Length: 186
Length: 260
Image 1 (cartoon, rainbow over the protein chains, first blue to last red):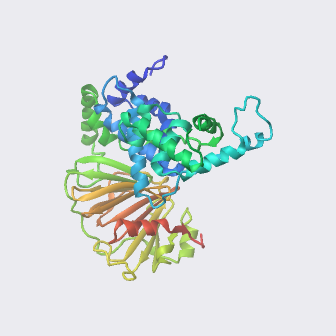
Image 2 (image 1 turned 90 degrees about the horizontal axis):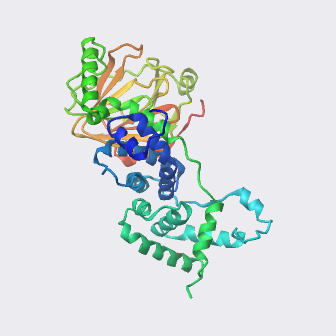
Image 3 (image 1 turned 120 degrees about the vertical axis):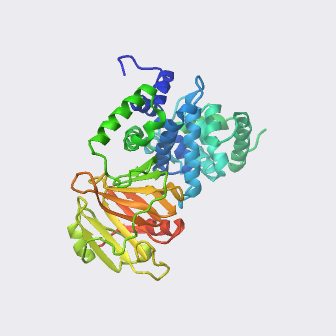
């Protein structure tokens, strides 16, 4: 592959020509976010791994249709998200995404945070419980935006909607979340 | 509640997200496994020419004979460890097996001692009516046979109600091939987190590559609906006249044998 790392654009061109090593680099660069998006959709690490693998394989086959210069990550995430949504629809286990808190952080709870940069444990638990009670669409919007920090284009890919509707979907999810935790605007 | 979004951002530090598995390795392995079919569609003209020359040399040497009907054009290949599923252009026409060649009848306890993996038994259908072991595959191949009845209709292809086959996929990566013609359906799915492939519709061909490593085929027969499931290093085949829902139920009930 040469000494200097190739740009994403060059990797895509090479992968499109059948260079599997170039495609492997693209997979390595994007596997974490692809897996996390699939996890947010399926609620299962095992299903997410399968969906991400299948998505990467399909994306390789679809590379000839990838438009040069377009952002790669939203395009890839749409394919992975499709796999994850389909897997969730067909799998016999339809568990909800279970959000857990790291044990280490729990240990830190005893130490007051000077800038109040940590959520107090009671509020955190209420918030987690409320997010868990949301409907699938609302929860996915919240998780994609705040936990995975996706861009609007990436959120649209994960939620299988147009980028123009991401803001309204997120606003609706936040409104539902406020209602769940018993708080209202104003 | 103006702090909600800030709180959600803080929540990100606390929530446990599962570690990312090594997806790149597995994707690379699966790409390599299906490379012959996939490359044809994507190679640059120069690479395609080089591949064509290489393929001609290989064919001239007579080294490619794993599938007897070389007229099948492979359109797409999928795989689990131990089996490759190929979409081919023509409907298969292998013979229907009159007797199942599945090896020596043994008890489940003895089978568990003889094969190199712990047998899995589908609890949904209880203990098998017959157990057989053969050693054409490395590590042994176990067959659990269920007679027709109790909701298991007689298969046109195996003559039994349900046939469950198990072998070490990691020791036999190229042992089985399934060629599915235009009338067959192929679907990849996950069953309790285990990768699986469902083949249904028109009958497909099942080939056993020569287990001794040479070219050629030791067995070939037509097969009906089948669910292939990767359970760790064991490849499980669940074959019978059943729909996906029933096959899923059976696969989901696979548990290690008490005698393993």
